[in-house]
Amino acid sequence: MKTNVYSDPLMLLAEEAAVNGMVFNRIVFGERYCAVMLPDGRCGVCATLGVAPPAKLPHVFTTDYRTPAGRVIMQATLNAALNLYDFEYDQVDVGSAIVASGYRTMVMIGCFYPLVKPIRDAGIELKIFDPAADQTLVRPPEELAEAISSCQLLMITATSITNNTFVPLMELVSKGTEVWLTGPSAPFSRLMFSEYPVTRLFGTRFAPGNNTLLKLVEEGKGTRGFSHTGEKVMIIG
Image 1 (cartoon, rainbow, N blue to C red):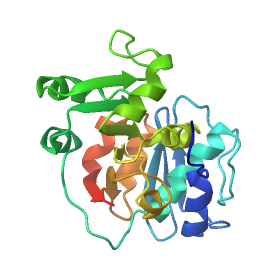
Image 2 (cartoon, helix red, strand yellow; image 1 turned 90 degrees about the vertical axis):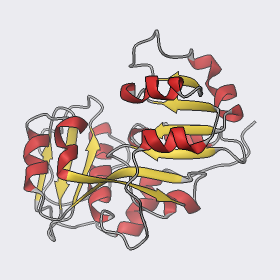
Image 3 (tube, rainbow, N blue to C red; image 1 turned 90 degrees about the horizontal axis):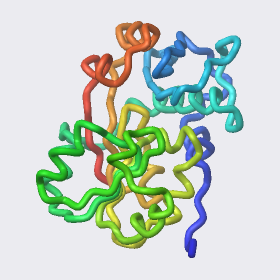
Image 4 (cartoon, rainbow, N blue to C red; image 1 turned 180 degrees about the horizontal axis):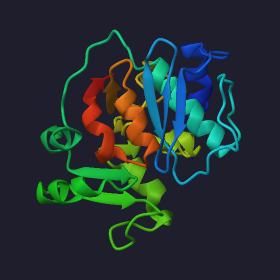
């Protein structure tokens, strides 16, 4: 039974970032990611999840919560706006953090392939849910609710915000469960801690004016292809 009702994070983040009507310095929509540069050079990305780009990329930011491409562009823009923050962070790899956490049961939403073997080698019981992943690695969707409500650690891809699955997943989280939101698409905002049961953010911080990032995204590069242009960080709520 659902005990909490949450709002679409993009709506709350848009209010916080206050970028409606801002003119883009540059925007690119590659095969795997969308990347945005704001007038002051701040950069942000969001995975496209296979969504086709709009017929014409916008020059001015406007909210669009309804279309898949609109949500991708929104999240990339909000991530750019929130990319410079004034709270403490650590440079910790998410895989190392998982192994060091001491948790013994974990659910992974979105299969992060490089992490699967190290997690299982550490003796952590791992259940993966991802309809697009190798189905020999994942659990059937009918087990999702029980797995989330009973696990110690829930690791969820930030693209769940993009495809509108984030809120239903949060409504399944039990009190005391650690929730880690991960990936380059993760927004660096305190709202993720205050409005949702998220306890840590793992994402990528990009320096202003990162034209290399936009070039690589435009060329169709994914996380491994552009991550070296940024700084992987962990923020604890």
